[in-house]
Structure formats: structure tokens, C-alpha cells
Length: 272
Ligand SMILES: Nc1ncnc2c1ncn2[C@@H]1O[C@H](COP(=O)(O)OP(=O)(O)O)[C@@H](O)[C@H]1O
Ligand SMILES: [Mg+2]
Image 1 (cartoon, rainbow, N blue to C red):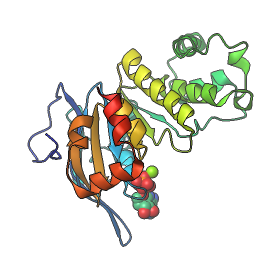
Image 2: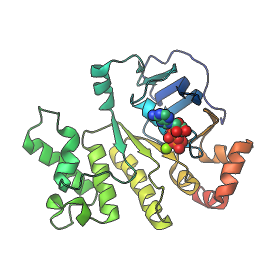
Image 3: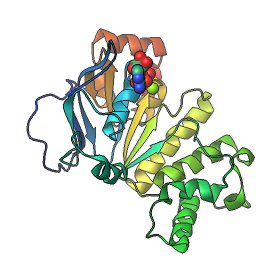
């Protein structure tokens, strides 16, 4: 089924398959009508990719998912909870379901690796220093950083690009999110580095069992790792499905996007 999801229905019950459901989402900034009725389903435990050209509203859409922006109209359910009306306090609880992986890792250069990773726990007063260190060390191990000599005391400028990415990922994982959001994680990377990031996303999905939402305009990456791909264009999701389904779509916006990226052949190889 490549038609985007539709119908309002009753999404107020937790659904085993669909963790996030978005219906009729609209957002305007001044004269600019960015989201014009977005319908989107995010599949639990899978890698969900939202593609679309620059300026189409992908980041704006992602910010709505974790409640960082309020829509002008429309609804968003996370595990059956309608999040749009939530107040500040309930929003805090909702946000703990999410981890955000920033494009350039966005580490604090004046903090060492442990302090950077533990940063999101700063307000979790019930955790002892020992518990925090246990979590940090567990992540360093699981993300293949434990073998780096003196890693805990290093500062970001002393790390390689790949190490910084993994420290950024550890920070996103430290509060044990169910959903990881990545906004254009491979933008600006050379093909080898982009592939490493893809592997990191896939491995994290498997090892931590998280739901991944990846915003991308990198088609090669999308078809390598996406279980479910949705395209945002003209303020709406115009197509949604597996990579095979989406690649088979005849929609002109999609064809143009796929063809200009020259990825059709690579994508065919990625899904034999
Ligand atoms: N906080 C904001 N205030 C005003 N305009 C915004 C704001 N955030 C995004 N926009 C505008 O919305 C449009 C979509 O932005 P964005 O979601 O960042 O695009 P994308 O991530 O798809 O490249 C852009 O034209 C951008 O300028
Ligand atoms: Mg963006």
C-alpha cells in the first residue's frame, strides 16, 4: 500500500504496530503554509524514513512529533495518547520517550565524554552517581567506545568524527528512549562516513529495539536502511510504504526525486 495513511478513526488505544499516528497536521509560519494536512504512521521498532526536498517541512514535522512545536490543526497520537493538548509537565514525561540524535553530534566541548553522555540525566534526581556511571559505561561498551584509551576523560575535540557521532548517540540513548529521532544524519558526510552512520542507525535499532524516525534527503541511505519510507512534498505525505513499494510509485514528485539522486540502481542492489 503506497497510498499515504488517511482516515481519522480512533487512535486513542495503544497499537502494537503503529507507535505514532499523525492526522491532518497543519502548520503555518506567517504567510508560509508549511504543513498542509500531514497524515503519517510510524511503525514500532522499525526504521521509518521521511524523505523530501530541502525546505519542505521535514524538520518542522519532526519537532511536532516530540511536542517541540504545536500544530495549528490536526492530531498526533503517541502510543494512543493525543499529545497536542498536553501541558508542560505532561510534555516533559512524553519527551522522555524520545531521544534526539543531532547532525553534528552537538557535544559540549568543555565537558568530557562522561559529562556529555550523562547530560540528559541532570534533572533525574533519583539516580545516584553510581547508577549514572553504570549506564554510561554500559553504553560505551555497547557502542564500541569502551576500548578507546581514556575515553571517559576525553573532550570532544580529542575524538574522531566517528567517535563523536557515537558519543552523541550514547547521549540520545542514556535516558532509555523508545523512539530515536535523527534529523539528516548523513548530510554533509562523504559516502564512506554516510555508510558508517547508516550502519550505526541499523545496529542501534536492532541492539536497543528502538523505533527510529530518520529525516533524510539522502536517497542512497534511505533505501539502504529504511523499513518504511514516506515522502513529504507540498506540505503532505504523498507516498508511504516499503522501499520496493515506494520505488515502484509512478508519482512524478517521487520519480523526479529518485532519478535526480541517481540511486535507483543502488536501491535495487540493497534489496535483492
Ligand atoms: N520557527 C520557524 N519560524 C518561521 N519559519 C520556520 C520556522 N521553522 C521552519 N520554518 C520554515 O518552514 C519551512 C520548512 O522548514 P524545515 O522543516 O526546516 O524544512 P526541511 O527540514 O524540510 O528542509 C522553511 O521555509 C522554514 O524557513
Ligand atoms: Mg531540516
